[in-house]
Length: 308
Figure (tube, rainbow, N blue to C red):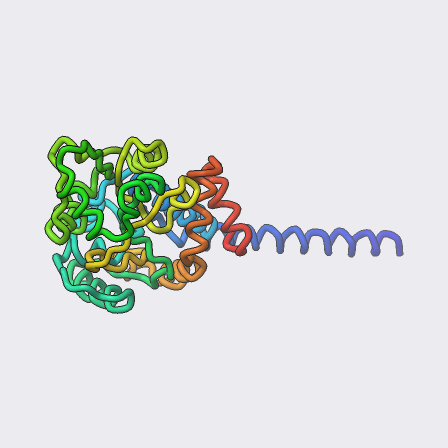
């Protein structure tokens, strides 16, 4: 009786171990079936967070992920079209103005629909968008804005620069903004700033915020989901002539890649659906103001929402 009982116990144990091994094998097989994916990320905090969250999430799902970091907009789109990248997070306004040269003012829904149609012809598919709109804006240090006529709109700001050519004014912007159609060239055409060539300074995006905080710059380019706007006491000027379009972020993937990996659409929707304006500002603040690493912030967020 004891021998039979021991034999049955050992047999049950072998069955359990076999079931565990089978589950592990099936999991590995499923992970391998996801394949590899090449992701691109631009050079500012929000893009680093989006790419890091995507990397961790897709790795958890079984993808082999390769990320190229710190890309300029002028490089990221050609790289994707030329099959050097499979996926990147893009903004509707960037595609409208920079890549497709659409200058009419469209709301978020219209912008997404238009870029989806236009980019599909180029072999790029816009997946479900996030709710957050990270548009460009021009900001001033609050103290400088108050001291110079309590400036609140871009029209007032532009008039002030034209009316005071004798006062040196440093205007700070990231490298991309200096030459993009939806950047300074188009904005200056709309508002007619009075900056001299020497007053326009291109720099790393993080340095723009530092220059504004330290009042080394009279005005500068910021992103509306950036937590440093409030932390550094900056005043965002109203775009009263409606130059900047909506910049809702969404994952954009090559059509040929999505055809081979159709599950990616539903997988990425789970991540995009979690990202609204307040969430993105909070995540950006943790990195830029609280000095937490993008890896830590991304992992916390994904864990909190059950994605890893």
